[in-house]
Image (cartoon, rainbow, N blue to C red; front, side):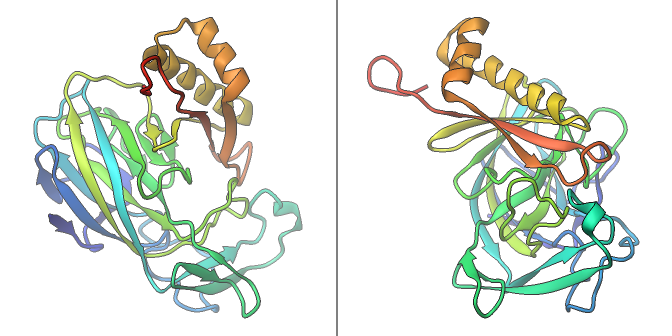
Length: 300
């Protein structure tokens, strides 16, 4: 197994970056990841009242995959997410879905012990580890790791967790995969713009799929197919995710668009991943479809 430390980070997904590591298809990599503020928030007095000088949501990498070319795709299986002992939550003045009610800045360092988030002496709940940023370098201008797009990036999708496989398009030779921005827990919406941000170690297995072109990231779990969308307009973000799911169902189940559309309406869900500043910051969405049995007793 190969390893990358959290000193090997980037603040954009960009074809101009020099790979921190080059691997063959099928290899396993363990990545140390920073939290969204690169480890600079260490106490309740460290406020988010200023930007980090280098950027936010750093991704460890990038990882080049040998023989990856535009028109291929990657599958990244999330094998383990090992969390640090504590992370942070915060509120920023005038930021978030309830920005009109937010005055001033607050930070809370939150311990994570034995798989539980210790918000206070009286309030504990199970941790729900997830990867916020995962993506490949686009063909064109680099994209900040705080942003999202067809390349992946800051999707903030809680289905990207242990046991999930994330499928990503390859836009440039080598793909240049980056992973970071782990949350110990994040509610759908991430309405303050800040989940439980935490340093972590993420173990992944990466496969290259030659000549398997995909338009956008999608995720599979043991029970679900999940497609993604993003746009400043929440309705358009949901529309993109739903359209991608219809395309996936047409392929997986060998059905027409109308049949896929009906199946989505009968059994699928469209959901918000992140809507911290609608109208100003891209909303991230997903469509979720439970995997159904196919003739012969199997599933597609």
